[in-house]
Image 1 (spheres, helix red, strand yellow):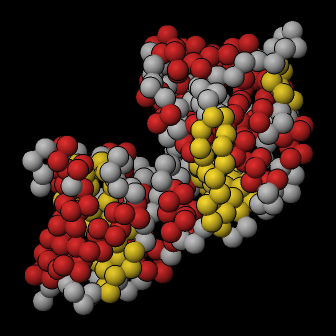
Image 2: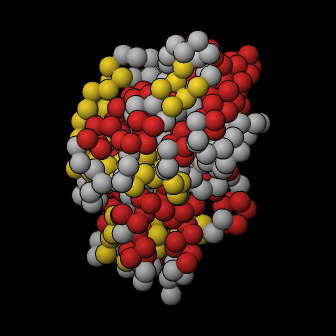
Length: 374
């Protein structure tokens, strides 16, 4: 029996690599002689760097400016001559207690500092992942760290933070473009939200970062003001571009200085060998912390399922919790599924014993598969 285990992270308890190890142990429990391929995956959000390190990448640790201007310990990964920079490493939501105040103050300067460090260290390419950020500053802080100037109508530097964007009058991208000249710059995301509007960065992601209705309106105005200034500076018109709202607009800012957007899952998958692994497999098992409607819209489990289906291989899923109906799961192509909370005494218990429960759930799925085989 040949089984591929390809989970994303179980947020708050297991990295994708740890989840893959627990799943592999479960496969061995049910089928001791099985061939097992571990292919932990990510979709360009938090945890992507862990997967890249497991695929042979070299981690580089750097102290940068955090989302509230305090120093934070950040990192990026070098693999194949490219630097993989995770925005959340420098300005992740985990660095703040989200509130109306922080929603306006947080910024992405540390993201730009990571990119600059990688480029000045010799990286020939930069891949920026943009999930899990605490900021809605439209990437203005990142651009400043890369050398851009962001000024108000009086010629003074605009303060950091999304709340200050309403005073942006001029942006000069010359130095940032010079720094990245000759560098292949890519943004990895499976988020399709534009920068502005009801599906934009402020409206959709602002509340997750502490913004109330008043702050969302203020941030929307600021993002529009900044986008107009970027356009006058010769940047791309990013207001309605799919994906430009990812990371609170940091993806859109990257687009204005030449970055190309690509699927975060596809990029990571190409580095982990999942396409080769699923060919000829008897079963693929994926998973993540919470399997919901968003999981079927570009998240890692859906990407794994697509690859399994393309190879004609059945795919099962294990998640911390599952909010989809059996009909939804079957329509998505999953042949079996299990939720850890159903095996635990409480949500807290499922988090505490996640590895153990994941191992047991995987063993049960494999055991059922063997029993159903002719």
